[in-house]
Image (cartoon, rainbow, N blue to C red):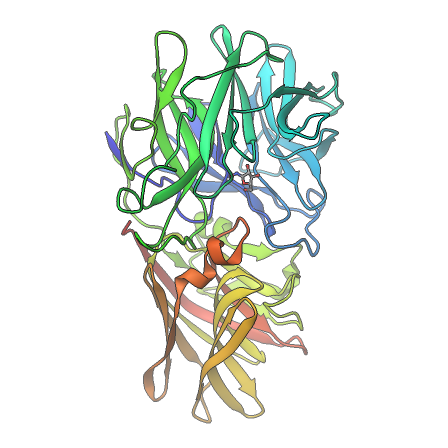
Length: 502
Ligand code: 6LW
């Protein structure tokens, strides 16, 4: 069948995949957001639904005032003898740890730390042994893949951490996964950095600690040589291998959709792509369509890809509940989901701070979207924000100024912040409908007061992109409130339609 990539859309980077009891699971990075490490489930590798978040408590992960794109980096998800393991790195504190559960939808354990440097930790359960693999540096300070054996009950190292591979020569060697397939140990990694030069490379050995022999046709997968006229899918890298029930292999990897052929910007974050793997007679493999990942990919799967797009509302569905994200160690008492609504209690913390403003966000997963929501209440400022980080966000909000109310459009792009327009409401305007229409290039902002629908302005998407903002995240649509006196705002009738284009 032909599938459409990405298979998980919006800011869900660094995918790792495992199989358990006939189902597949993917975990992704979450950085400064809580709940952290979203987990998706699928029966067929094509249709994915979020079913959990692995990190739900501050006793599992310290996120207090972590910088944007700090916090929780690339996880690896594995299943062994009835237990799921999720191993990751809190990059702000330089610590590798894992948590576990027997019920993927339930609570996960507190963390067990492993004393090995580097990021992107991975686990291989191999007979009685458990190998712990991450990136790191060798004695000469050169980037390498580090590996040790651990006791999975305690996290204690049973061997030294040993450099096992130095990659194929690309910068930022990371994302290692060790697999035992047949008589070989395969070590797959990413190189080139998580931007336009990203790629997947690999090597193999007959022993888990090497010596590893490099695949001579590396990279196995990359879109780095495709121009925007050939593919707007760029940054393909950081992947994990999976074998389906028929014995066919695939790589799930990250990539991103740039916003136009001559617009080398992406603001939706890094997303999850699926590519087939082809084994050769000699035990090496190739991947994708001659080493590249395309939007439409032929894969040896049978089924039907659901093209329903996830629309965001306040409806009390399980998926809606799981999709909302909050900044850092957020204050739960300031959030109240009510019937078809959300109440937010403002604090003195604004969206410009590296802190936990009152903010409930959902990832933007398509370029073309249409959002409406009504806002009311007493908070000084309450509205909707398209938020990349504290330095780049577009805010459409209801403002209280004495007895008067205004609707304000404010843009913050790096060092420049401007209120583009303020519309004064009628005296008794208690409830305002906010509306945002987005395309790949721009957001347009409207409001509806007693006087009718009014246009406040537009703003280009590229200023919210990773190329401008830096970092590893993507845009979230957030509902937020600011009020030094801790007054409440109310949001109702949210409907955010997201339409698949590219
Ligand atoms: C992650 C690294 C990477 O740890 O980006 O694309 C880093 N690859 O492997 C942050 O997501």
